[in-house]
Image (cartoon, rainbow, N blue to C red; front, top):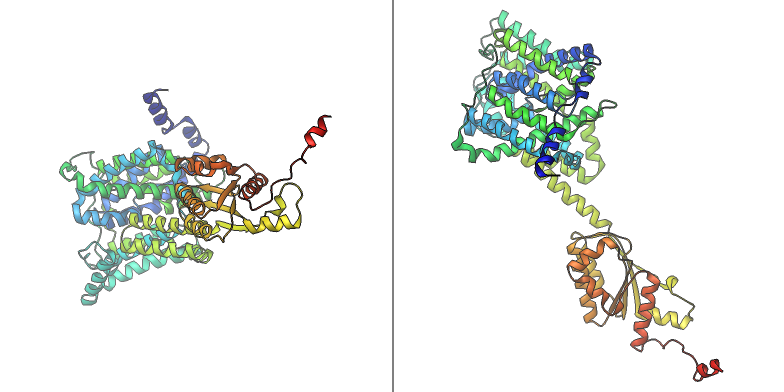
Length: 575
């Protein structure tokens, strides 16, 4: 098959199929109701995350409409709901500070291209290798950052300058102490309280929109000037445009684009996994999901939207509301589009403090105390990775936090695997071929020592074996039983070769048994196999290796020669 044909087949596998349309026709009523419910929940979140990103509420709405529709249509999950999220907002804030709104839109477009490239490269499968401790720490860190980002609006003070959320929060608190705004605090706390308490009493009621409407009415009726509103919104989506592109800044925006793409891929696949776990019979296609998210991020900036991902909270609401197909997520986007066109003047009157309350409650609900406690108690390594990832998310940024979490988790996993590898001295007499006297047994035990290697012989554990082997007592033959070596890398093979050479220089012969076919290529690549084969010292079984050791000792005069025929016996047998 030609390269062009392979590429066409790959792209075709990422596009929507007839089964997607058929699924939308099975139970449209349930999907339409679920989509309406998700839209009600998503409206204040889209507004809040748009404001938090620095591009305004209209950017959040445009993202929810455009990215939500495209990801629903082209993504790999029937239940995923996409749009602006808190995790993405955390990444976007420093980009806005450094490059302005045009930089964020350019980053979104570049990130979309990168995520589409990941889909074509079939990178979706690697999500399975992200440890749960990294995901839990990542989620906890995001929740902390989202909550801290809302402090300026919740306190009713102008957002201070700065990129680090801890610094900005501290400056906002200082400003509030100088000029307190208790109206904003009351609105934010009231909205958050209604959402948290209401979710416990009636989980199916969208208390976020109820609380936001109530806060807006109170602010308008009582003329609370201290409750700053969102501001004017455009009546509709802007026409698509590439006017925001700044080609001269592409070099400096590439690194942020990679970070945004990594987060979009990670959070979307995680959200799709959560949706699968909440249902029976649903299974997302990770590569199609990446393609849908990449396309959504490619197009959303053209309409003034920010980068988007799959949203865990909205996806969970979608599943709990009875959604069974993509129609629900498409309905959610359509309802939000109607709101953009028909209710922009009303939406513009929502107090910023009310949206801050929505996001504060969302951040609190993101923290699953039971899951965190279970992860921390599982193993010390899981607890360390969780805390380190959360702290890195808060102090650095999300992508660095995930990289650090993965690196530490990998190092701790290697350490645990290396500890499982053992080299034990074993009694070889049970494998002695033939019958032998006690005197011969004693001679063999005096000159031969046998070791069995269990587990992986790789870079994290190999040097420990080198020390053990080279410190062998003064014997003449070492037998290495290698049938239980599970894996071997070049470092392990080199260490084994080094140990054999050192033993040979001391006059100690090394016999091996049970080398697996998969290990031969590694040993041969570093020249260790030739060394082990020299003078016939590589054997298929342990008895054969012991027989080779006996022959070596007999040749060295340390064991009596094997009994031969009596002189003249051959002549007698021919008579």
